[in-house]
Amino acid sequence: MTRERFISEVRQCQGQLRRFLASLCGDSALADDIAQEALVRAYVSSGSFTGNFKAWLFRIAYNSFIDNLRRVPSPAAPIDAPEVMHLDDGTASDSAFAQEELQRALSRIPEKERTAIVLHYFEDLPVKEIASIMQAPAGTVKYYLSVGRDHIKQQMSHEGH
Image (cartoon, rainbow, N blue to C red):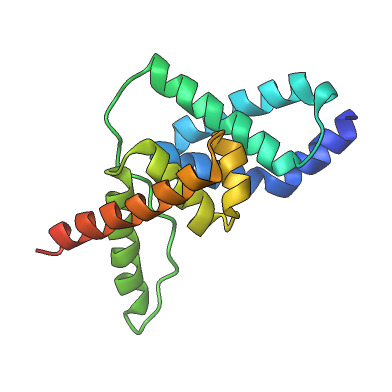
């Protein structure tokens, strides 16, 4: 892969990559650091790349995230809520509250479930691609999605009471 092609491919998915990592680690600065590490790893390995670039890059980023967890074990931090446009009719504040509640629930579920949910529902990736990124069988990813949804529902119902 040429340097120009690598840069072009990265530009196409860098926003999704950063959002994915920010959702996983709950800290924008840490997400940026992990993304930088992943991009360096990807560039160094780009000579041997074949296949789906986005899935390959996300797998490297996911592995960088896991490596970071092993280096610095810490409880999951609340996930940064995305910026919300404020409307006069109050719907933006309701939406922002619901988004914050969802982000808190996500931050409290196990990392593998959170990863599968973020990739499937936030990044709109199919199970097969998530399985490639997580290096897990598709059936396991489906399990993470199912259990993760249940855990989020439990977290959100506890928060509502």
